Image (cartoon, rainbow, N blue to C red):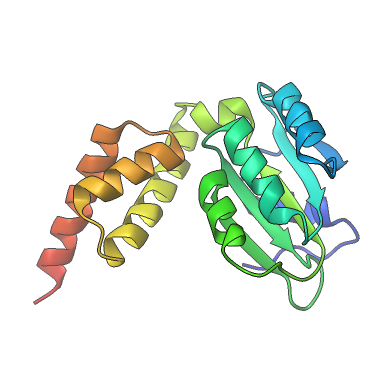
Length: 184
């Protein structure tokens, strides 16, 4: 995935993130300390528009952990070095992004994080349901490919993406059945 070139990393990320863009708020850099950062995140928790933040590489893991805890299971897209030759777009939910960057060395470069607003995370509209279904399927495939049981994968996806566990379980069973048919 390659973003559109331009002078604005937040707008470049929004252009390719797949999050709603009809309304968004750009907050700039989050506070450096966890307490003030958590208070700001609590203040914006119920906002419906897409939330966009700058973050430094050094604080990214801590900020993602605070976002996951305060905002809950929401889709987020992280852009690194946008509009440059080595740009990277990473899509996931706040919990998995927090885990990923908490376990790895600090990334290099400039970072922008876009987080789904409250309604985008929990909406049941047809377009949002299809987008959420794609995220559910992608995450279930990852977990099943790593050897998770259908039950464990469904439980984790339900927790991470905020979907009903029975729906995630049904979807995981279908994926497992497709795989058995396709594999001789």
